[in-house]
Image (tube, rainbow, N blue to C red; front, side, top):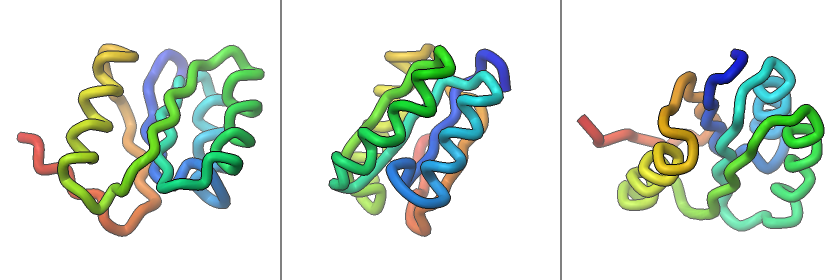
Length: 97
């Protein structure tokens, strides 16, 4: 995953945090999407950034299509591309074609 960009919904806790950390460990920059657990997402920062990877934390409701579009657009602005998508949330539908 070296030099790739991974997107992990619910990347602030549990399985999402573990996946975000694993992607960063393999060399990916990581976008972590979370609802409102700012303290939890701050804890995800360390395993990602200590390995020299970048992290873009984005707060919002992945059930809202407008937010889903915003996640993709902000990811593209920050990193210029998006590679693998790790989706832990049950309701993340990309309506972008």
